[in-house]
Every structure is written in C-alpha cells, then in structure tokens.
Length: 212
Image (cartoon, rainbow, N blue to C red):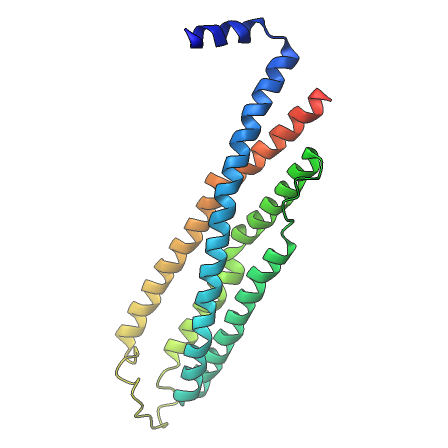
C-alpha cells in the first residue's frame, strides 16, 4: 500500500519536485560512497608508507652487505625510490581538501571532485612512478649479482639470492607478471570506482545548477 501511495505522489509531483527528489537520493548515495572510498584510501596510504619504510632498512643492508658495485648502486637507488614513494603519498595527503560542512554544498562537491581527480591521477600513472622504477632496479640488482666475477663474497645471503642464470630468468618473469597485475588492479580501480564516482559528482553538480 505504501509503495502505491509513493508512486501516486511521484506521478502527481511537478518536474522540479521530481528533480529535487532524485537529487536528494543521489546525494545520499554519493555521500555514502565517498565515505567508503575515503576509508579505503586511508588504509592504502598507511599500508604503502609502512611498506616503503620496511624497504629502507632492507635495501640499505643489502647495499652494505653485497660487494658487487652495480648491485650496491641498485640497492641505494631502491632506497631513494622508497623515500620518493613516501613523499608521493604524503604529498597527496597534504593536498587533500578536508571536509568542511560549513561551506556551501556546491563547494563541498567541487572539493570532493578535486580530491578524486588527484587520486585518479595517482592511480592512472602508477606504472611510471610505482611499478617501472623498482622493477628496473630489481632487475639490475639481480642480474648484477656475481659481477664482476673476480670479487670474493662468502656472506650469509649468498645461498638465498638468485645467482645462476635460470633463477634470474625465473625471477624476471615472475616479477614482470606481478607488476602487470599491480598495474591492472590500479587501472581497474580507476575504471570501476573513480570514474563512476567523478561522473556522479558532476551529475549532482549539473542537477544543482538546473534547480537554481
């Protein structure tokens, strides 16, 4: 009975009232989705920064322990990359416009859109700043192990690193597959989550403009 009454009210409403009704529902849904994605982003940032902090001492130790010059350089550059990753996520966090309910709703929407566009840029370019640099450095690290051959090394790590060619090839392929998966995950997040969210923000903005 209630459903029939709602339909009757809907049919009897004016066009402006229908637009306002649709807009209210869209705004509620948009707000819920924004809250969910903000939580996901905070967890991701924390995870990535902690991961980069773990990389720092590991590759710092490898640069100290392994005697091969090119391997040491690759280890030190990996430390630099980890520092850059921390800087990258922290800079995006600092650029994020905080929610301010005292602002006009249109301005709040514009701020949300700006934040999501920033995330869109971050994920859409992950291949260039997050995947390729460590992939190249890891390959240089692995393939330079044992070169030059006249350097003596009897460290405790020697039996745990891919020193022969077959192991190095296997490592290269496995790492390539893993990195391709990382890129795919981020592209999928852009396509399935960020693009629809940005489109809905723009849709609400357009409807707000039409009701003015």
